[in-house]
Amino acid sequence: MSSYRRLFSHEGSSGFTAAGFLARLPLSMYGISTVVMVASARDSYALAGLVSATSLIASVLVVPRISRLIDRHGQSRVAVPATVFSVLFSALQVVCLRYDAPDWTLFATAVLSATAPNVGGMVRARWAHLLKDESDAMHTANALEQVLDEVCFIVGPILSVALCTTLFPEAGVLGAAALTLGGTLLLTVQRGTEPPVHEPDPAQASSPLRNRGLQIMILTFLLTGAVFGSLELATVAYTESIGHASSSGWVLALLALGSAVAGLAFGALTLKAGQTTQFLTGVAAMAVLMLPLLLAAGLPSLAVLMFVAGMATAPTMITGMGLVQNLVPAAQINEGMALAVTGLLGGNALGSALAGRVVEWAGPEAGYRIPCTAAVLALLAALAGLRTLTRGVKASAGGAAGAEVIQVVEQR
Image (tube, rainbow, N blue to C red; front, side, top):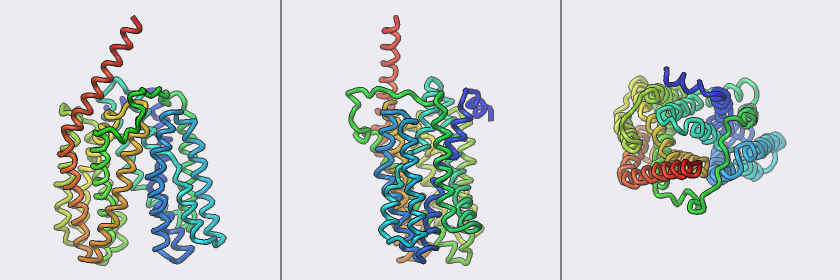
């Protein structure tokens, strides 16, 4: 664990890591909390699912624009008002349900509450600034952040269900909103570790979406998100079909646990292979480890296979986010990471929808065909874009080296 201890020898790192964890824990809470809240109030899972999906789609469209503003004006100036706006409309959604407002108000508040910033990207941007001259430490930092993401998806749903069932149905959404606001405020008051605002290079003023390397990453992340979304639905359907519907939560938690364990180990390693090679290896491992899920025969075998399948997830995401950070200029780092995350979110929704159709047509056992197929397609996308990614990383490294030479010459 010495690699991780060295990370926290940097002043302020413990503070922004803890605040960032609190602020992004709600990411795994809002979806299930919204479903429970709306279904309890309106007695309709169809309506609950549509409201939750509307919020997700709005986030995919809005969050990259919020991140662009953060790149241009700084974290504290943009994240705080954006979060306050989001929390206010989350609270208004609860009020609309309490007082039997029309259904359209639930969709309107779902869209308007989608302004919460990508806190994971903000924290990774702080690490990137703090460790800009320490590539090995940055690898470990990315691993730590991915493990914390996995912990969020283990703890968040459990906390949401506990709040909704032990207190009242709206408690999950209100608890998530409180954590979002409190965590973001705790993060943004730590000005000492906030990355400086970089003046954008006129040659790089266009959207990072035009970056060919980032396009490859978004496509790969879209397919990776489809793996996660379809895996969740397929597992719920399969466990229900074998008479263990209540076990779906902990079976999915085993996937996240396997990912977290692998992520901790991966972050402690010093690897000689290039980033693109590491990423391609991770995607290939994910495709290989998903395939045995087709052989699941009962709850015990499914549990073991889910834990094993999760072990390629964190290394893939660690190297993937590292690649995104290297592909985009510093002045666009928050927007670049937000676009990658929205690719994951969009793929999650797509995978869930496809798996639902397959389960209806071919039965619960067939649901695992979708994550396996999506993982293989993600590997093909990464292979097809390998040369583009390699060129993009080399160009980024060359640009950074050139900037350092210019800075030294100017100083002399």
